[in-house]
Length: 398
Length: 239
Image (spheres, rainbow over the protein chains, first blue to last red):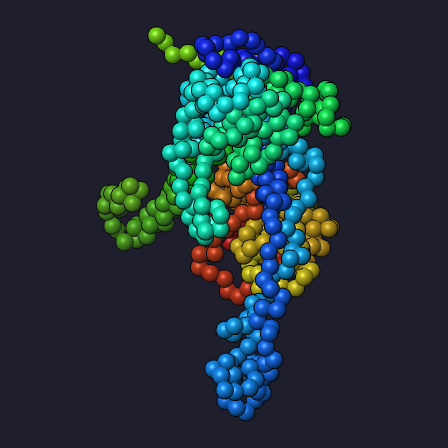
C-alpha cells in the first residue's frame, strides 16, 4: 500500500526512572490492517465454542421403567403407566417428556457438535483487526480501559520488562507507566458471579485489565501472574479471545520493544508476506481512503462531473392558470396579438355597421319616399293638410 | 477573529454553477429569449389571421364562381378531425378498445385531434359507436388549445402556461407560440404529428344540455359517429 511507505513512529518507554522516550520504533503494518468488527465477531463467537466440554444427560434417564399404556376405555390418558402395585409409583405416567420422572424431550447427547472450525485466513484476519484496534484510543477507551494517564497508545516499553521476576516490580512498573488505574478498576469491580456458576467453581468475576505482550519470557510471566486482571501473552501466539474479549475490540496492550518489532515479521505487510504464517499477507481494506466526503469534494472528482441539472422550477409546481377567454392578461401572455385582433375586429364591425347603416338608410328613404308619394295621391282626393303629414314623416325617421 | 472557512467549501463556491453571476447571466438570457418569442408570436398571429381570412374568402369566391358557371365546387375533403369519446370503459370489445387506446381516448369525454387519411378513417369506422367526431373550425381549435390545452412535459400533464413552454419543446419544428400550435393543428402541417403529440388528450366536461342518445348514431338522431361541422357546437357545450 502506497499509504504505508511513510510509517508513523512509536516511542519506546523505559520501565522505571522518568517517563520519557528512550527510543523510536516504526509502527508495524498490522496496525493499519482494516478493522472489521463483523469478522472479529464471527470468528470470536465460533472460537469461543472451542473450549467447551461435552455434557449430556444420562442415556437411561427416565427410561428405567417398564411402563405400558393402559389403552382406551379406562377414563385415563393413554400415556404409558408404571406397572405393578403396592407403591405410589404404580400407575403413574412414565417415559414422556411431559411426565414427572420421565425422559426429557430430545435428550442431550455427547456427540453434539461442540467445536467450530474456522478458516485459517479468517482467524488471521480477525487477529489482525483486533491488533489494529488496540492502537485506536477511542476503541480502547470504549472497551472500558482506563487509559487517560498513558503516555502513548500503542504503549511500547523497553525489553527489560521481560526480565522482571517479582510481582512487586511488576506493580511498580504498572504504576510508573500509568497503567495501574486499569488494574485498580479490576480490583474494585471484583464480584461474586451472578447465577449458578458461583457454586460450580466459577465464583468470582473479574474485568479484563491490561495485557502484556512479550517476545521472550525471562520471568515476566510469573511477575505479572498474580496481578488481578493482567494477562501476559507471547507475541507468537496472540489469542483473539484475549485481544477482543467478548468480541469487543480494543484491549489495552503493553508491548515490549522486541515483541512490537516482531509483529512486522509475524503478520507481514501488503508487500512482504509473513515469515511465520506461510503465504499470509495482511488483509486489504475495501477502501483505502474512507473519507468519502473529501474524495467527492476533491478537485480531481469535481472537475470531471457534469453540471448539476437545475431543478426545473418552471415546470415544478402544478401551475394554476385562469381561463384566457376570461382573463385578458393570461390571453396576452399566450397570444400578444389578441388585443390588436379584437381592435381590428371592432373596427371592421363598426365599418360594416356604418356601411350597413348607409344601405339601410338609403333603402328606408326610398321606401318612405314611395310611401309619401302614394299618400300624396290619396291626399289630393281627400283634401288633407300636407304639413301635418310631413311632420309625421319626419318623426318616423327619427 | 473571523471564522475559518474550510477549503473544500471555498472551492465548491468557486466552482458553483449556482453562483450569483451565473444566475444573473442566465436570467438575462432567458428574458431576452422570452422577448424574442413574444415578438415572433405577435407577428405570426397577425400572419395567420390574414391567412384564415383569405382561406374563407377564397372558398366563398370559388363557390360563387361555380354558381355563376352553373357547375359545382367540390370543397377539399377535410384533413382534420376532432374526436370525442362518449362512451365509458365498461364492456368495450378488444378491437375498439385497442384503437381507442392508440388514439389516446382512454376515458369518457376525452378528445383528440386526428389527421384524416385512409388508415385513420378505417380506425374511426371501428370506434364509431364509442365516439363522436367532426371537422372543427379555427375557433374551436383555438378554444380547445387555449382553454383546455395541456402539454406533455417530462411525462407529465402541465397546463400551457406560456409560449416558453411551447418554444422549449417544439422550437425545432418552428412552432414557437400558441398561434403556431393552433395553425399547425388546424392546417395539418408538416409537423402535425409533433404538435399533436405535444398536446395531452383534451379532458372535456359532459355537454351542457346533455346528449339525446349515445346508442344511436348522429345520423339517426343519436350522438355517435361523424357529425361533420356540428362537432363545433358540441365542443362549445363541452369545453
